[in-house]
Length: 226
Image 1: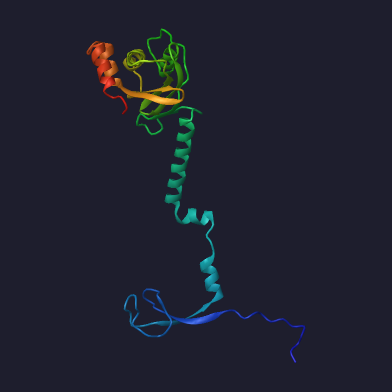
Image 2 (image 1 turned 135 degrees about the vertical axis):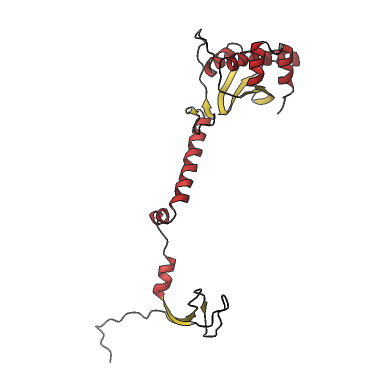
């Protein structure tokens, strides 16, 4: 009769497989050649539960970092840049040229124009706001975007609004403004009703007298809806 006070270890699952020493492929029988690499010798190997447990263990985050440092660091950098760009785009702050490529992101606050010889994006916003209800002015890469609510009830009136904005932007471009272009977005009752683009090079040409006001506005009109 067995000793009732004793304890015995539970039986652990184990079985034999035939493993190819060349490629590691396992076979249920000793039947060379290896069906993966063609090797003519197979070795008998005992497989236990411990082998399964080691294979099923999930590596920790630190293990992954240690084994794949470059991909992990690159992924973290991409996520960080994306988060900063989202915050800047929502107006939390201005992100100024983070990659040295002339890109900026973020909302522009209005600044009262002065006579210091420059006309900044903030002064541009304040000047536009003297005549129109500005919803936002923000950097988006290499361009400025102006969103304002139009009061125009005719094409002629809308053209007059665009002309005012374009002339102010020409002043910004001529004074060394960093943006390459201005995207004008006009809204009415929350709906977008017009979209035009002003290239900074056009603004500088107009400011220097190289092109007429009519030619300047004609170029802008051709970008409608783009």
